[in-house]
Length: 150
Length: 150
DNA sequence: ATATTAAAGGATAAAAAGGTCTTTTAATAA
DNA sequence: TTATTAAAAGACCTTTTTATCCTTTAATAT
Ligand code: FES
Ligand code: FES
Image 1 (tube, chains in turn blue, purple, cyan, green):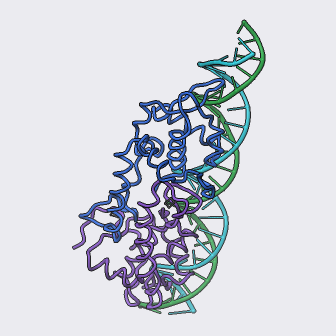
Image 2 (spheres, helix red, strand yellow):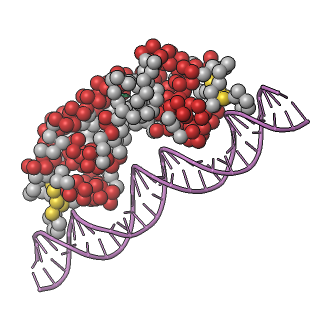
Image 3 (cartoon, protein in one colour):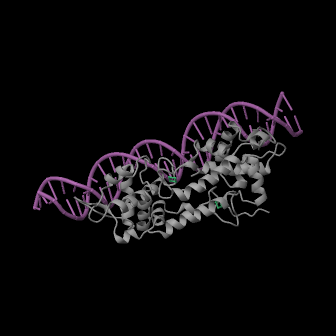
């Protein structure tokens, strides 16, 4: 449904929202380490996210990545569409050309409500709002999935 | 979530359940044409499905693929696990090492109920039951997704 | 028996996804 | 102004997934 690339991008953008700021920028390596993602791969993703204004960066000493107020208004859907080129959340679960109540696949009426819910969340919440919620509910952003948030 | 291969396998097995029988076997080409899938690729998938007793075949004139009563008792999960090697439905939507209520990713509580529902359906309904339901509700099995069932 | 038909088997090929490395550019601290 | 730092850019490499082709085997209709 989502490529690994877009999953990395989502998690690390949320991580930036939580842990970085204009005053405390973070390097790819630091984030890659925290999220447990191959850093050269993440570096490529970050280049793309900077270019399309989802995250920001500066070079040099104390340089790194962070989010501006403008960045914080982007959405998870923006990330997915940028990285995956298209938004595969909308695709039919069984691969039909289009997901459509008039030509439903055998699981359409189970899948469709879920898609509405998650798509709505990804579209209507800004990164900032999403990150705040993540922090409030203590959700995990580490790919290893084993660490505990304190 | 599901590979294209397992989607093809699911759709064509359901198609076999609806349209083929011991008396009226169907060739790969016929099915590939109906479902709109590359036929050499489907042929390979069918070899695998035959080997693990999810579908049946005979060679020669009037040969082809069909389901025995035993085949009809298999489940969609059996297909997925055979073709994809593993069942990725259980995976975390954002890629965490495991999907777990104790270490939930930011969308876990939206995703988890859906996974339970679809996994339950795929595990508890036999192919035969599934296919009957598909027929009753007039669900579509054509990948092109445009044809109308009459 | 023989020709014909359709699946099985096995070897490749093409495309996409995932990941790495090296050089260049820009910011800044000394 | 120079050395250092960290991102940008671009060229590769690897693995996995998807797809094709060709030869062999087995069933059957004649
Ligand atoms: S048609 Fe398959 S999920 Fe909607
Ligand atoms: S932890 Fe991510 S979907 Fe359950």
